[in-house]
Length: 574
Image 1 (cartoon, rainbow, N blue to C red):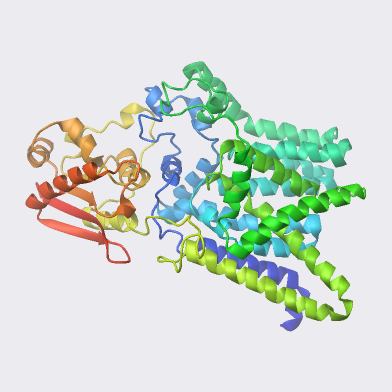
Image 2 (image 1 turned 90 degrees about the horizontal axis):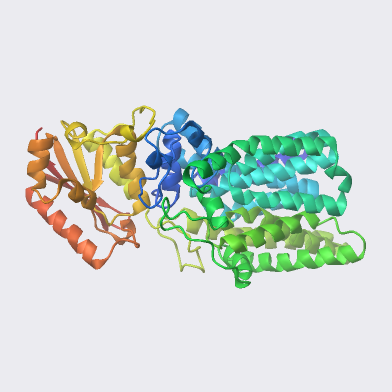
């Protein structure tokens, strides 16, 4: 057994690192509620349907009576690949919060493995192992891989493209796979395009012959061919709507007020945005990790210029070009946490360079005490990783974190922990909701809900309009869109049926079985952009009316015993 571990020590170490990453990213993956933009992504991926149920952000479903075939080639605000990947997961594994997040968690684990392979090619095996280990314990990478944004899958394809590029420099036929990977990368998010100028600049500096090589050009042609459906989609979008998709239209300052009234042009660039990207991205790590990370960025830049003067500029060139162009791009886009998810692997590589160079320097200076230097370095690395691991678990896994935000855990934590999940589980058990297969949606007619038809001999669900919009989209509107169940906010229902007695209306005119009202009672489930003292008072009055006539009520409580929801049930025609 000992001989096995010695012979395969690299593989064993890498397996342990990937196993640690898998635990951190998969443990209780479905515990926290869906509560941010991932609701819009998952809702659309579920049926591979570009619809967000909002008059402020309309889509081809709203524009055309029948959804045109070309609108399936992309989405109005992002390329299609991530939605397609999620769609496949839903198709084969069913509908759940875990399945919604699983592709992103697996991409995060894959990124840890890819960083090892990239680090190994750039700096050697020990660098690859250290970089993958640092990324595995990284709080920010764990968080980014669990929240369901598009970026983790985009990042995985960025790293895969870099790996195939490096392999292509060694063996030109691999540039074919570089092209495939680059095309898929562009199909995840437009922001991944920063990597193409990185590669061209790197080749101009170090390998100009590659730019005109047959295999490299073939790879580029493949990348363009794979991305061409999105280009055609935008041509048709411009032809029918007078603008490109949301991202390109915003970039080009096109008038989109008719389709997306709240979308404005990009703000003028300010130099402070560049500094904000570095500061904000470093803020989501433990203090020792953060300090060493900032030092490593300065060190790698200084090391590059020192080697440049000696005529050896190539060692850190690719890493620095990636960081430089990515940070510049992000400074234009913004330093919101979701965008900065692309940075941790490259930060892990810069920190690796600092730590290994420091170790090798000290070992060379103290040749008689190499064992002591190695032992001390190992203990310091273990301490650094231990602090970051505590910070990571405290941020991403503990229901009630220890200490203070910023010092002991990152301010990225979920707000709503297993509250909407509990609510949906109760409704499924109580009202018999079932995530059965649903028919394909081909146009507006497939969305039209007629209360007298959809609600007859079925349940009606009315929810507090103060609840989180994104969560309501996934936990309530999903049932209306894909399963023809009547789920509506109290405001929407009031607009549809007017000033009538709701109980009489749903009992006598609709013929519904039961009427449910879902009242949000905890700030954790309320939408800070909508909920005010006045709107909460209105919801309380609604709840009071239902409480007076209901036969049953149910409280959904948080881990601390605080009531998050109260559900009132009025039996009508059972």
